[in-house]
Image (cartoon, rainbow, N blue to C red):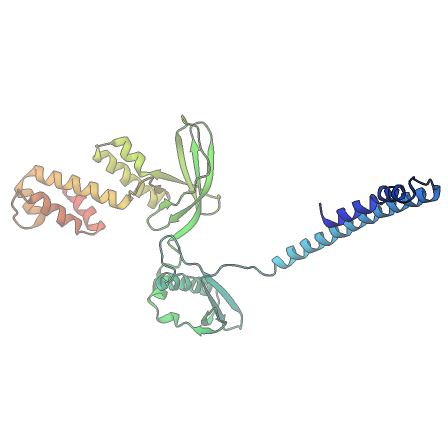
Length: 328
């Protein structure tokens, strides 16, 4: 109830007030037919004026909303951590915004910022644009030139122009036929799917039948394997567990499969741990000669397990894999 409605209500009640005043002044209500007709006319005109005013107000509000909708296509208001301008030889410019990764990077992590800026520069240049200069736009309106070609991040961007971590779509399918979709993040190098947003709650007896991820907004879907499910399935059988983890790694290279974890497991680290444990047990079982041949020097068998673990932990992933397959 706004003030205009209240004023209209007071005017419409004027007839009652008039009659009360006549009783107080003359002691009775004096019947005058013309007054009644005029009051009815006033009531009608006041109501018509109120409705007309409401119609005008609604029209103005609609015009304002249309104007806002039109101007919103012309500009956007955004929270920006870093802003840069790329100038080309043709005189055109391109604005680049770099948002700091608040989950795993400090807001002032210049390596992260410069790497993403250089990736934008490389991708822009790959589209056929000849870049003349790049400027960082300061909050006070000033700008300073960025000597990006001499940065190590620029060389890294030339080798790897795509960002490691991207936002993707995640789908969880259940045995009952239920399916929940949400957003997640994907590390394209390690193929890990993480930061999966909750999107629904299945029934207590419903089991997950499939996990899928899409990097292109649902056009193509890839299988996602949960490391924890594999470790629970094989329990202490690390040989079969390692085979399953190796299969995930192989399918990732061939079919584009991905992996996730509900704890703090890591595919590469878990594979290393299993390979190390299996290799150490196999060498110890073969005896001191096998250990000496593998290490290249004699070692006391009471210390052999610790020596082997330390030696294997210092190997690269490739060297550990080669040692594992060559020895077993």
